[in-house]
Length: 95
Image (cartoon, rainbow, N blue to C red; front, side, top):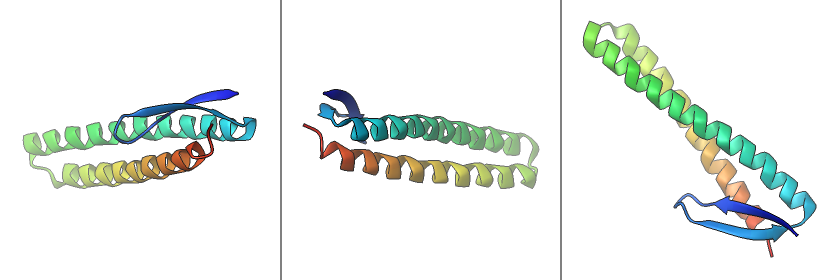
């Protein structure tokens, strides 16, 4: 039995047993999920920083940079959702 804790979008978790193959897939997806969450927060923090710089300076370059950061955050959020979905599909095979 290879136990893995799957965390759902609502914050709840399940700890089930998985085959070696499913367990390995969950591990890899878990690493990707952690990375996507870190970059998501990073890009949101960047967007906030650019907004503050825009308010200080009035320079439009900060608005463009803010939008770029928000776009990158949206891409990471999409990754988070896709990875979570894949993990929940594997979770259905747990026992």
